[in-house]
Image (cartoon, rainbow over all chains, first blue to last red; front, side, top):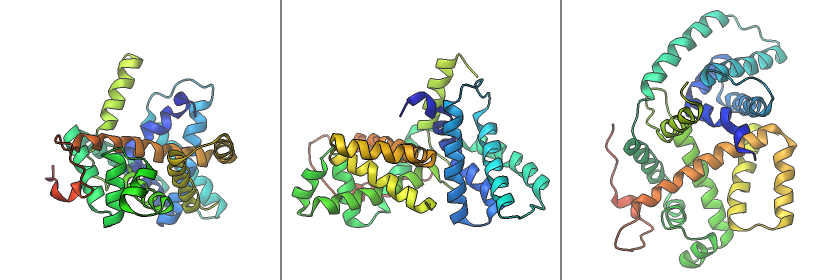
Length: 194
Length: 80
């Protein structure tokens, strides 16, 4: 996977909650949000690979892509969105609020992950801890805990999904990620400011 | 493929490739990645989160003790 193609997608992960909120306005259903979010990310990846001028605001661009995905979906379902204009105005408010919420620090982000790990079932948490804190291989974890490698794989799978949700799908207003701030700073340094 | 199936397949690949890989497995993975842009997108999302979890190595006790229940002695992090 070529890194540069991923740039829009990687930046969009930092406001996944905003994208989810946007999509939810049209679908009113979390299973459909999941579906449309994947499509949004896929289009961001395609856009990142396209030979087009660089997008100025990835946030605005991502929201436009999400809305287009939602419109296509609504059209496909032959639903006419009544509150379209009102929704788009509301999204702008949401944007501003999230930008304020995005002022965060590194300690808080670690705390967020710690909380996510504490929420895992016991065995899942132990397997995760040996893997991610102590760097054990899956084989070593299986031997140490006297479980099969298949079980180790299952538990890590569960843990990875949970951590991804915790990092990217935080309720609006409760953001404290910061890996993204560092990512953004690196990009800005690289781009010579936005 | 339903969204939940794509997510399940992506995370399965992520963890499987961490345990073992061979040219055959790698080819099958590439095939899956290329089958649908959504596959690649969802995989990148999970890989980013998973790599990010490596920061938890900072919590490793300095005395070299291996404690699988480490997180339970950390207490609940204070709310910001």
